[in-house]
Structures are given as C-alpha cells and as structure tokens.
Length: 129
Image (cartoon, rainbow, N blue to C red):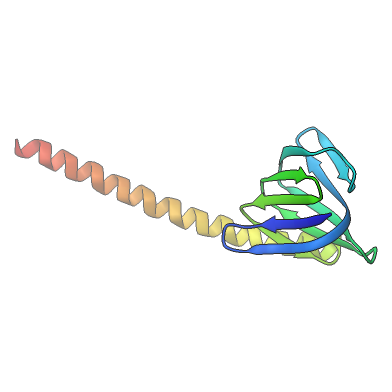
C-alpha cells in the first residue's frame, strides 16, 4: 500500500507501507493491502504504520480523514507530528499543541478586540443619524 499523509501546507508522509493501525471514532482498527476500500473520520490520536522493512513509525495526528482506495491510503489532517517512539512522540505532541493553544488564544483575543471595535463603530454611526 502507499500511504500519503497530507497537511494543509505539505505532504508529511509519502511511503510504501505493509500495514496501518489507527484509532477511529468507534475504536482501533488496522488496514492491510487487501482490506476493503473505506473512508472514516479519525479523532486526535496516534497513527502507527509499518514500512516494507518491518520498522514501525508513529504519527500524532489532530482530527483527520482517512480514505483507503485500492492500494492507496490517504490521510488528511490539520496537524500531525512524526515520532520514532511513543515516549518522544508524546513529548513532541505536548510541546507542539501547547504552542498552538497559546497562538490560538492570542488570535481569539485579537478577534474579540476587532469585534468590539466594529460594534463601537456601528453604535457611533447609529448615533449620528
């Protein structure tokens, strides 16, 4: 099978694989080359895939969509992090998502200030009538 893990700005993984294990909304599942075609939503979690040499690789993903069609497995995620083992992946995910949470808080704060400014301007325009 060929795995492609797509992010909004780049292709994170494009590699031949022997198997894939993921957590779906209804529990964990595995994919092998001859499994039936499918599409499913993936909650935030860990994707495990085994390359042709038998080595396991881990990917921490944000919410994603997985589509298996014939020999292709496409995973589209907003955010994903590669890891060599679960311990290092856990730490990388924690650091990355804490940083994202801080950036999201700043963006929401800026958006709230913009909304207040717009409401204030509309109020001023209404008073000028």
